[in-house]
Length: 424
Ligand SMILES: [Zn+2]
Image 1 (cartoon, rainbow, N blue to C red):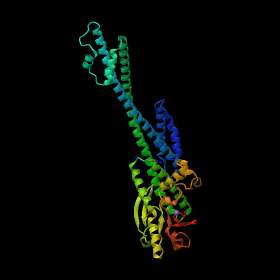
Image 2: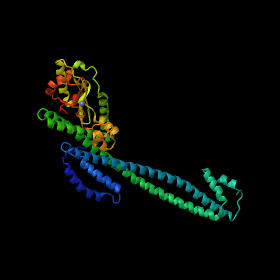
Image 3: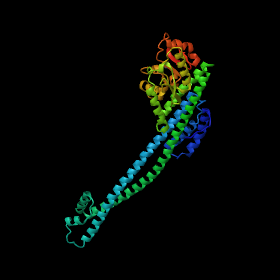
C-alpha cells in the first residue's frame, strides 16, 4: 500500500492537472483515444489520491472520489477489452491452424492427382480403377475422401484451378496466423500493463479510504473535546464527519477487490446483525460494561449492553448508565451505531441508484421519504435511542434531562429517546 504524506489543496491539484495534461497528450500513443483517456485518468487519479482529507471540503472530497472511481472504471474497462482481444487472437490462431491443416492436405491431394494424370497421359497403369486408388490413399477424414472422388470426375483444367485456389487460400491462412500471433503478443503486453494500472487505481482508492478513516477518527475526537465549550462547532464537525462516513462507505462499496475491504464488509455485516433497533436483551440489571468491537467505515466501535457505539464514547456511555442505575433508573439502549451502508441501500431502493439519487436528492423526493446518507449522528455511533425513553414523562427521560449533560449527552428536542454528544 502506498502512503504519501504530501499535503496539497485541491486548487493545487487542479493546477497540477492543467500542467500535467499537455505532457500526457504528448506521451500517449498517437491516434489511440482509449490509451490517451486511460493515461489522463490515471494521472488525475494520482493527484486526487493526494487530497488532504482533513482540510478538503465535502465537494472537493466528492470530486476526488469521483475521479478515483472514474479512473478505476476506465482501467477496468480497458483491461476487460484487452482480455477479450487476447481471447479473440488466441481463437484466430487456433482457427487459422485448423484451416492450414485442412488446406495443406488438400494441396497435397491435388498435387498427387496432377502427377497421376501426367503419368496416365503416357501409360495406363494396371488397377487404375477408383476403388484400388482409394485404398492406396491416406485419407484422414470422410471429407477428404469425398473431395478426392469428386476430383477424379473433373477435367485437368479444373484440377489446376483448384490447386491454384487451394494454394492461395493456404498462403492467406498462414498470413492470418502470423498476424494473429503478433496481435496476441501485443495484446498480452497490454493486458499486463493494464493489470498493473487496475492495481494502481485500487491502491489510490485505498489510500484515500485510509486517509478518510483516520480523519474521521481524529475529527470525532475533536468534536467530543469541544462538546462542553462550543457545542455549535462540535456539532458542525460531527455533522461533517457523518457525511464523510457516507463517502467512505460508498468508496468501500466501490472498492470490491481488496482483501482489506472484504474484512471491513464482514465487520459491517456482524454490526448490522447486532445493530437492529430493538430493546436490548437483559440489559445486565441496568448497569453496563464495554466490549471492543470492529472498525466500520472509519468508525471504531465498542459494545455497551451488546449494542455497538463509537468506541470514543463507550466509557462515558457506560458511566452514564451506571450512574442512572445507582439512582435506581434503568437506561436501555435501543440502538446507537447504524452502518451508513444500510442507509445507502435504502436510498437505492427508495430514491434511485445514481450518485445524485443516493447522496443529493432531497429526502422528500424519495418514495417513501428517506434521509440522505451521512445526515445522522447514528452513523458515527455518537447518538443513542433509548428504548425505555419514549416520552418526556418516562423515568428514563427525567433522569437524562437532569444528568446526561454531565456525561456529554444532549437531547434532540423533537425526539425524547434520541440523545447524542451534539444534541443533533
Ligand atoms: Zn435516534
